[in-house]
Image 1: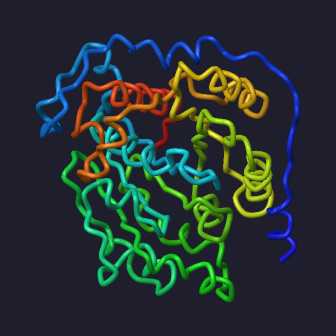
Image 2: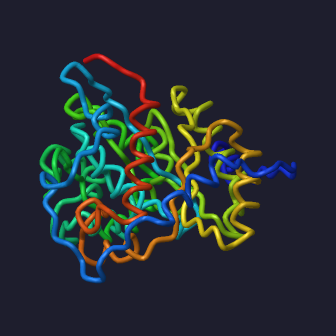
Length: 322
């Protein structure tokens, strides 16, 4: 239990730095973008216009990444599920075979991809608790090259059930190892906590993306999260790296948002994505229709931001072979 006692110690820093103008400007560069109609759009992915800037990011026949990325932050409401849904849908759009794993009992990523949340249906809970064959739990989605392992409310009790399990931190890794060779990217949506479910995700991942909301309370617990990642790397998964911090819900009208970006730079230095996700009504509406923004409104500012972010993920990816 000594390892878990270490995890819940906080580690804060108090240095000052200036906001990165390049990062900040990327959030507002689309402010003159054409506004969308008020009604939701029903757009098939194969009808989406491909511009010349996108073409270089489509998967080449000889590319194979096999990269596992966890999206983690113990603070709720920072955009983890929104990022998981939209990153995976855009990775699929760019031709990469992608699997989304929903480790959050709230099942927001599951419903966000239009998958019915049903406690009677097998989910990631059955895989990590009952040892069910992970291949049988994978669900198809309506989106190109994208599959998902759904969550369910049963996962809320998994923390207690895992406590007495052997190799409890590796249940997800053992399952994913059986199928990872079939996918270019596996994206894991973590719950808003630093318990065993998140530890399982970090133990299975190659990298972690940390969404951070551009608001006052965003930095609370960030030191604790960084300490957890450090301890997982030292004790459970020596290959785990921070891919970067993703600033979300940016509103250029709020001066404090720029100050938050400055604070985040103290923690992450150059490991912060250039793309900043703006506050966007269409991004907020899309989950209620069970659609990623790529399908709901691909021309809105939120969609353009997530497309840009996905390009960064692809560009920063390390090429691997089977």
